[in-house]
Length: 353
Image 1 (cartoon, helix red, strand yellow):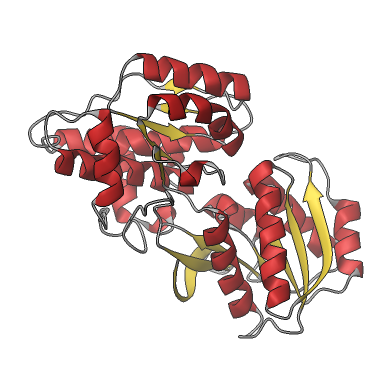
Image 2 (tube, rainbow, N blue to C red):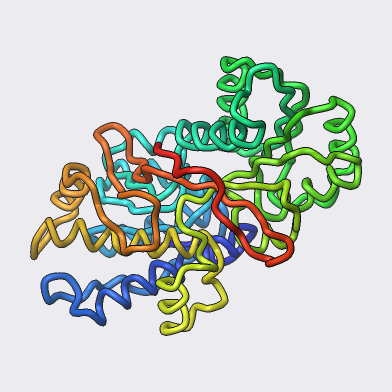
């Protein structure tokens, strides 16, 4: 298990790691896989950095594992790709890069660029009443490799559907201190809707800055910032965001697992949900692979086994890996915020990806 346990991405990495550990402990307590326990070893810290990620994957691969799991930021995954290509070991991970999704070793419990765009466009369509054509759209995003790529692809898709992009603002890091001037720029462009694709901290900051600057229209967030804490921080019925998994704060399955294994601190994070799904993805592959299972056989088994069912109440669709595309998630769901109840609620139908 590799995770960003320290550094800027630690909140997400620790939550993902907790989800993996809760799932594996649940599986092992129920008898393991065909009577064999899954040994995940001690978690390795990738430190949210390129150097930390490279050192972590080397340490993991030195143990000759059947598979590796990871809860890491995309820059760490990108840094690990050369080592993974040489080793050809299945990597079940909650991060994504455009290069990784095409690799035979990549099994992503995360959305790729195309899936993110399709999901957000569905949310924009819903928020503006059914037609994007003629709508003025402002786009805000994190200026990371993947973030900038998604913003570019999203804008192109919206324009093809007849929207006008009236403003684009990118944040320099996942935790900026202010967005005042950028919010004023967006508001002055008179958008009908604002789309955010940023970190949890920035999503809250940007939404509040927009409100202060006078914006009162809908805001569509992303799967990168869809936790209960984000909804509470914004506290607005105008904000909606997509979930790749059921809201963990209302999932009995995840609540019970978090409580049983001491991970209640992380149970409201979507990364806890992703980690839990990673554990059951690994279980499904090992079951079909049989015992003993080699790393090469597990890789081919995961790629060819078709739909993988995760525990009920976790995902909106099965997990399935296609040849040439390692993105396993097949559906998402938008949620909104009920200020009176201080709770999320589903909006619109499940979006098939």
